[in-house]
Image 1 (cartoon, one colour):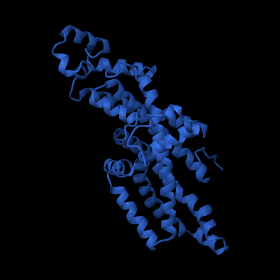
Image 2 (cartoon, one colour):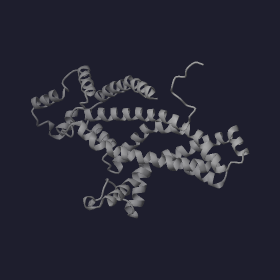
Image 3 (tube, rainbow, N blue to C red):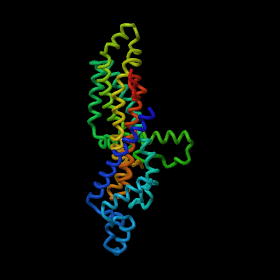
Image 4 (tube, rainbow, N blue to C red):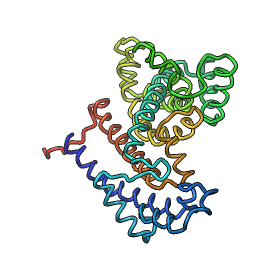
Length: 330
C-alpha cells in the first residue's frame, strides 16, 4: 500500500506541473493590469510613471512572460508563493489564515453530505416505490436543481433576517473572546449551520440518488438472496452485506466531490462573509492579484489529488477484495 501511495504521488507531479503551467498563462493573458488595482485606478494618473515602472520591476511584471513563468515556478518549487499585490503581504501568510476556514467548511459539508445522503439513499431503497421513497426522490431532485447562491440568500432572508435564528454572516459573535471554550464551540457551530447546509445539501441530494440506485442493484445480487435464505435479519443483510458493496461507487464520488466543494465554497464564502480560500481567491481575481490566484489554484489542485488518493485507499478498507499489491504468479 505504501508503495502504491508513493507511486500515485509521483504520478501526480506532471499533472500538477501541467495545471500550474496552464493556470499561469491563462491568468497572465486575461485582460486587466494589476497596477490599476495596486495603485488604485483613480489615483494612477497622478503618479509618476517612473514610480509605476519601479513597482513593475519589483514584482517582475516588466519581464517577458516566459521569464516570469520560469521564476515563478522556481520560487514555487522552493515554497515561495510570492507577495500579494492587493494585501502587500506574503501569500503564504494569507493562505495560512484562509485555508483552515475553508477546510472546516468543506469537512462539515462533506460530513453532512455523507450522513444525510447515505441515510436517505438507504431509506429510499428499502422503501422502494412507497410514498416515503417518492417524497425523498422528489425532494432530492428539487434540492439538486436549486442554485446554491439562491438557496443561501433565501435561508438568510428567512432564518436570519425574519426569524433571527442564525447569524447572517461572519464566523463568530462580537463577544466571542469573552465566551468559555464550550460556548465558543457552540458559537462556531451556530455560524457554520447555514453555510454547511447550503454547501452540503445539493451533494447530499445527489448522494441519496446514487445510493438508492446502487443499493437496489446490490439487493438483487445472489449473495444477498442467500443471506436472506439463511434467515438473517433484514437489517443485518442491508447494513453488513449490501451497504458495504454499495458504498464503493459512493467513495469514488466523494473523492471527486472535493473540487466541486471548493468551487462551491467560492460563492458560499462570499455570501456568508466566510474568510476562507474561496473568498480570498475571488477578491484576488477582481484585483488581478496574480500570486494569490496562482497559489489558491495550486492549493485546490493539490487538495483534489489528495482527495482522489484518499478515495482509492479507502476502497481497500471498504472492500477486502480490492488490493493494489502486485499478486505473485501461482
